[in-house]
Length: 163
Image 1 (cartoon, rainbow, N blue to C red):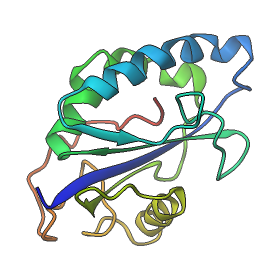
Image 2: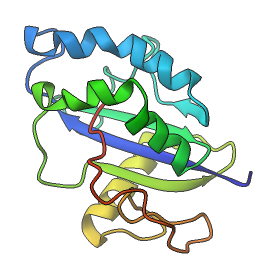
Image 3: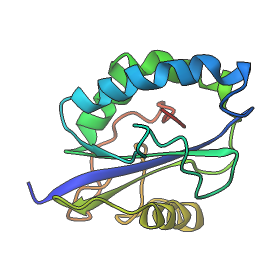
């Protein structure tokens, strides 16, 4: 494998993490992260010493970031849409604001590369400014590592804003 798929998604919290509004989200984090860590195709995720990325706020105090690397788009889609993660995703509007702008970006990285948060944010900004391209895309407009368009994984899917 010469490439891996990196993903970043961001979410604006409705309340601070220690509030009652966010309690169910916070209580589900450890189990969902364990599920991701053991999912087929999972390679790496951004985390602090606490084991998740909730303390990392590179784009604002009310914004959570989630970044991970997967073997391919099918492995990521299986985790997001066809695992226990989907139950948490269905409740996301309880915890997170609906964003008017793009909040999920995918891009290919060389095998073994672990993207920095700055790299990920630049890819999100690229997608927001110019739309999908081989350098920054989403599940609705997926590209292969060689830059060619890939099959559609499901135009009706709503990518998860946070895990």
